[in-house]
Image (cartoon, rainbow, N blue to C red; front, side, top):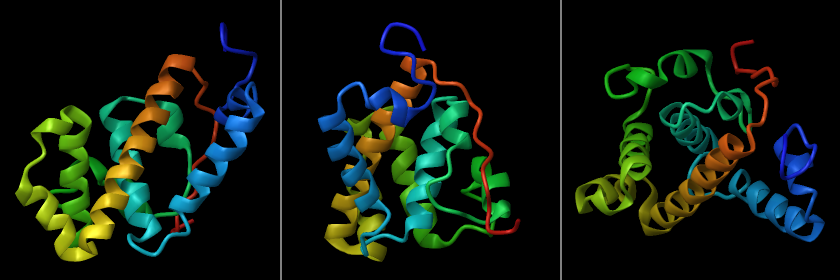
Length: 154
């Protein structure tokens, strides 16, 4: 792990600052229990960010089980029929967010709001900030990719 600590995963690395680790863990858990956007949709967005950033460790993390067909076809989310219109709206938003937050359009935001409302859009933006930050930190910390992902089909 190097200069931060000897941790070999996110939780061990964050434990360097226990009071921060506890608060972050509570915030992160809340993403998966909220009612605005289905956790599986958030997981697809988190995984798409990991793909775009080429983060093997984040790709192997499993915060919410998703169908293997979606995992296998995530790079083709725009055209594969295993993704719903609502998931596609969130994934389109995610892709632009990953490249340039300022390039997001009103149309992309409206597409998310059509399915999840204003509160859902706010949640997605907040979740993407957390996912993007953690993906970048995993890369910075050079965490090893050792977790085996489980899918709903297994």
